Every structure is written in structure tokens, then in C-alpha cells.
Image (cartoon, rainbow, N blue to C red; front, side):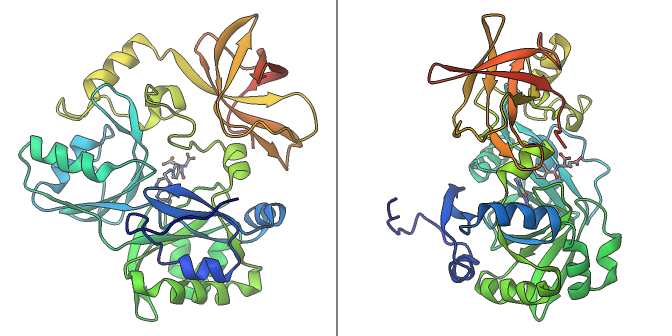
Amino acid sequence: MFGITPSSRLRPSPFYEATLAEGVTAFTTYNHMLMPTSFGHPEEEYWRIINSVSLWDVAVERQVQLEGPDATRLAQILCPRDLSKCKVGQGKYVPLCNHDGVLINDPILLKLDEQRYWLSIADSNIWFWARAIAAERGLNVKVSEPDVSPLAIQGPKAEALVASVFGDWVRELKYFWFHQTELQGIPLVLARSGWSKQGGFELYLMDGSKGTALWNIVREAGKPWGIGPGAPNPCERIESGLLSYGGDSDDTTNPFEVRLGKYIDLHVPDDVVGIQALRRIQAEGAKRQQLGVMLEGDKPTELGFHWHAIYKDGHRVGDLTNCVWSRRLNRNIGFGLVSSACAVDDQVIVHKDGQPTSARLVNLPFI
Ligand code: THG
């Protein structure tokens, strides 16, 4: 389509050379970096995640490190989820909100030490945010972005592969928990996590010069299980009901609207950013909700990646925030951000360029 002009603002992933060698055919931008999205075989790449094991360059999930005497204080001030029982070695999914209770990121928080945390962020600048909040609150904490780059191993065969490389102890690792370890001298954090519901692990590479080496070790070890290159998959994640921050949310979306209310603890201290607004929103009841949308018709439709208006009984009730052809359901499916007055089984109309398509609201996840 077009080229990309290199610049020092476009930061390279340590796995860039390895993905080029694998034949990467498309990238997206995320956190001022390029993330591979396709290796030219979409169908094969999808079934690899569902049936075997897939290797993803997700170095774009940058780590915002909080370190120092007030790191725990800052982590809690930034996160409207109770972190008081979070243990070293544990990770937690945390919706970050601004002062109005609007979702501004949905990272995984990793507690590395009593005084050191990583926020493994989605696509928005939390480094600026954390520094500003720390400075305004007069906290003694260093906020930085260390040389850390996640490599995801996802799919039902991921555990067997990772156990063959690191040992059987990985089978005991609980969801989002992690261990600092190394592989042939390559320092890394190994976590059970990843943006799919097919199971898997993430290796947080802690030496950016070793990206190709790490990729090749995992690639070689994965051969018996049919490993191949892949990327976070829009079809799998929509079938599985995983949220894409910035894709399924806008600058007014709060966590209650997009099924993240279970990660909000309203009893956290009053100085947690956004908690007062979240208490108010919860008391008043969220005005929108996220439901599945199943479109009529059994042929893939090109709805693209823009939001599309949803109507019910002639009134606009919300938006279809994404839409994809489900290879397992043989239907076009997506997420609707719709009025709280809507309900599962409602018949609705999705409008695209004036073209109406009938659809039904359903529970999430689809599968
Ligand atoms: N890997 C790493 N960091 C990340 C992502 C990642 N940061 C940004 C983004 N992706 C975070 N988004 C999610 C969202 C959901 C989940 C994982 C990453 C997830 N959710 C489960 C669910 O919703 O069912 C379980 C959550 C729970 O109950 O605690 O797994 O991919 N490093």
C-alpha cells in the first residue's frame, strides 16, 4: 500500500528482524511502535491459535515501571482496584481511569518487588500520566520505561511447549502470576497471560539485544507442536469477549460500561484517581453496556474497523465498535456499546453507509 519512513520516534521491537525473517506482511501502530498483525495466511494463523501454538511479537505492550519507597502508594493511586493483597510474583488486570472515571488504559499490573511494579500497558501514554500524578502528589518514586519486551506464546499447546523449555514448574503457575528466570543466559520474566482465551504464556524479554535469539529458541522448541508466527487475533478475541482499549472504548467510556466493573473496588482510598467519579457512576447506574451483536447472514461482510450506528425500533441505541467474521460460528459478530435499556435477544439494525443489516444482541463471550 505504502512504505513507512524510518525515524527515531518509531521505536523498533527487539523481535523486528525475526518477524521480517518469518515473512510478516502487515503491521499496526501501538505505543509509538510497529506491531505485526499478519504473516499473509489469515486462516492458518487463526486455526494455529485455536488448535496448536502461535508466537506473537507483542513488544508494543510497554512496561511503565514504578520503583522506590512510594511505588506501592503510586500503584494504588493509579489503580481503582484493591492492590493491598497483591503479592510479589502476582499480576492483576487493572482498568486505569482518569478523574472523571473514564477508562484511559487496561494494563496488567505486575508486582516484581515490595517497591517495584510494572504496568504492562495497552495503547496510551501512561508513562506521562504516572509521572504527572507522582509529581503532583509529591511521591518518592521513579517512573521509567525499562528495556522489557513481551513475546506471547498462545494456544492449547503453549503449556507443553513452555514446560519442555523451562520445566514442569510452569504448569503450576496461576493466571497472571510470573517468575523471573533466564533461558540460555537471556534474562526474562515468564508469566501465564496473553490476549487470547486459548491459554498461554508471555516471556518478558529483559535484554533488547537478544530478541532474535529468544524468538529462534522458542520457534525451534515449538516445532513438535506445529508452532508458527501469529499476532493478537481480532476474530479469536471477539469470539472470546476480550476488550480492545481504544478500539471498543472512546474518551467517554467508563469501566462499568465495558464489563470491567468486577475489577473496580469502590472501597479503595479516596485519593485513588477517579474513584469518586466511579462511585457516583456506579450509584447512578451506567448508561451504556457492552453486549455481543450477531449479524444476520452467513457470508463475511466488510464492516471495517470503524464504529457503526445501532438502531432499535427506529431509535439510535448505540454503536457496533468492531465486527469480524467468526470462523467458528460462521456469522459476522461484534461488540455493541448500547443503551442500558437494551437487553439480550433484542432485534436491532446496524447501519453502515446507509445500508441496514439486521442483528441480535447476545451475551458475551460468544464462545
Ligand atoms: N499482554 C501484556 N500486556 C498487555 C496485554 C497483553 N497490556 C495491554 C493489554 N494486553 C491488556 N489487555 C488484556 C485484557 C484482558 C486480558 C489480558 C490482557 C485477560 N483477561 C481475562 C478475561 O477477561 O477473561 C482474565 C482477566 C481476569 O479475570 O483477571 O486475560 O496481552 N503483557
